[in-house]
Image (cartoon, rainbow, N blue to C red; front, side):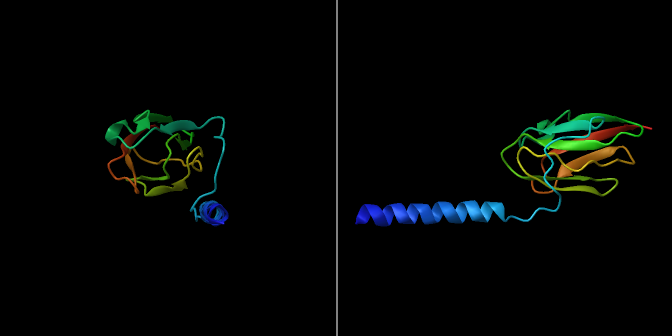
Length: 122
């Protein structure tokens, strides 16, 4: 009897975790690929100016930027000068493409120590 109760409780906890994870609210859609001509910046981990690769990215004129979350945590990138905002980026997903208008820094709003920079080749 105790085994059945314990198994039932474990199934209930697992079910709540699965349903709760599936219903989390995101401010941007999950994207599982980047546009072919986009500059891709990988999100590696929470490690200051080593959180992104490349941490300083050059963006040619007319090209967009996407962030690819290779970490196990959700991240949310904002370009400081433009106020451009990726919304939440789930693990494994790409952000929506953005076209930065100015050089400058960007950071993760969830983990503010995560910083990088964009250099526009315009």
